[in-house]
Image 1 (tube, rainbow, N blue to C red):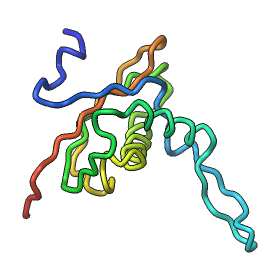
Image 2 (image 1 turned 60 degrees about the vertical axis):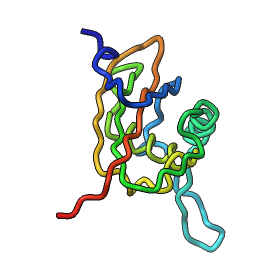
Image 3 (image 1 turned 180 degrees about the horizontal axis):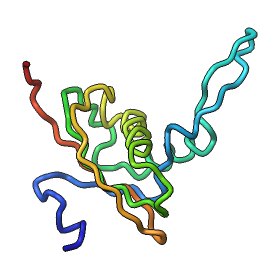
Image 4 (image 1 turned 120 degrees about the horizontal axis):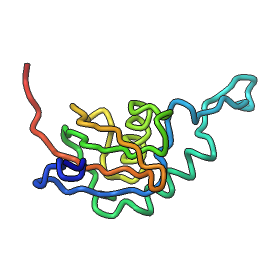
Length: 134
């Protein structure tokens, strides 16, 4: 069975082309002009965010503001990339594209890693959920 056959058909899936950029490895400490330092995104991360926003058509500007589950299949170019770092970057990109209002609303992640050296990409869907009481 192909991975794409396993995708839930009741969700709206979107594909973002390109290698997902790892959040963990793409921030830099730079002088803040006051004798200290501040953290900024690398040029690679900023470029990926812009590419993500251009490709994000189904979820852009939805401003989802209730708890949600992120479903994702991350097609990496090689095995050397970490799935968890790709997911952190994806949540940041969803917030930048205004698909979600805040990534802290993510209550669960259903994710898979696959390898496609010729066509790295992200397939994702957002499933809105109701808040639960414990």
